[in-house]
Length: 333
Image (cartoon, rainbow, N blue to C red; front, side, top):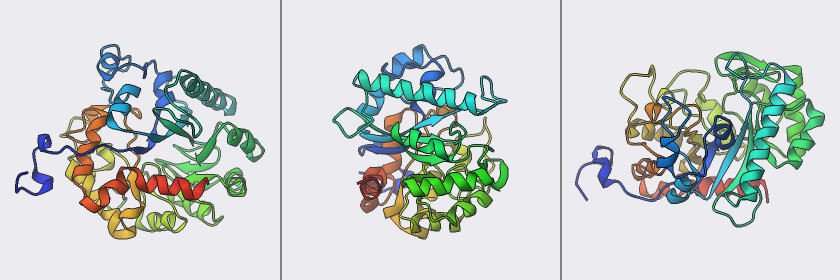
């Protein structure tokens, strides 16, 4: 291999295996947008209903990349986005439709929602808690397989969120306490700072499925250093997200995409705070954006291997999925 530093090597010279665990994929949400994820990626792109969002994820693509486990989301889209919900009933309907989609894929052999052998094991993560009627509704969702809940996306009935500052609401405090009592994990991604520290007071277990450091991109969508340390103090893992605006401060669409080296700097910042053993991937690929907003060199899911190649050799297996797998074993044994 070349004597150039890893960060300066041509992408064609980077060729390690890809991630085997991804903490954030909006699989059912994409299906609701009309994408057939059972198609090979080239066929999906040829018939893609989402203009301007070049797809990177399909089941054959995930299989070829070596992905074995992911957190698959139940994500209800709120108004004013087209088709978004305006009340609890609308949010619940979206989440139940996505749950039905995962079960249909399971029946067809594309994935498993349990521990059985399949090309892909999926653990359910609810992104934004508005589908939950109230804390008494939590056992229902746990019975359906939901193990992780992010109370916010933007603002919800339960918490302040991305670009919507605010604490936990009284209902949110009750929800987080009920999550703790049931042994469910809180996903801090999208949670506003005030709401985060309200949740932290309960002692609930936390992860961040897909959040980069606020020290590098200063918005409430990211984690402050203290927030990252607290998540790890509960045993949690931090998932790195592959969207240019969460990697480079001030990035806007139309600019050159962030580089893989800049994503590495996000990883290095976290590693300096909490160590490499608490970092993983929460790519969010095809989570409402396509290759147009991903780092340079990420043109399809399997290209995440190029990011892993730039990490210290001793850290790669952990970030590729071993750290998330360890967390799963400790949390849901």
